[in-house]
Image: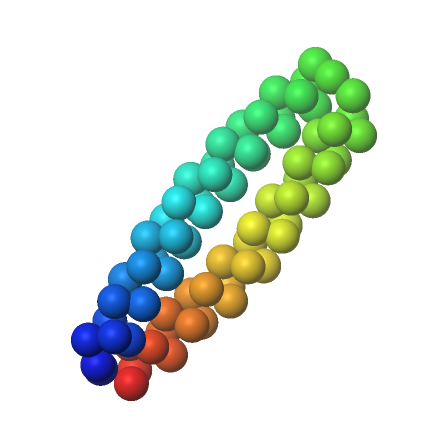
Amino acid sequence: MTDNNEAVANALELLMINQNGIGAAVEELAKWVAERGPTEVAHNAVNALQVLDLNAEGIASAIRMLRRE
């Protein structure tokens, strides 16, 4: 793997770790809102989590591809 690909893979991995942390926080907030507030807001948060999960799969795939080269 080239140094450039390694740097990109490392940066993507850090972004994915941050994304996972944000996802965990959004999940906690969604649970809190679902128990206390409008279900529509909780539903929107769950939809946002689904997008984060979908994008995490793409990021993980790119990292694997970069590390194979």
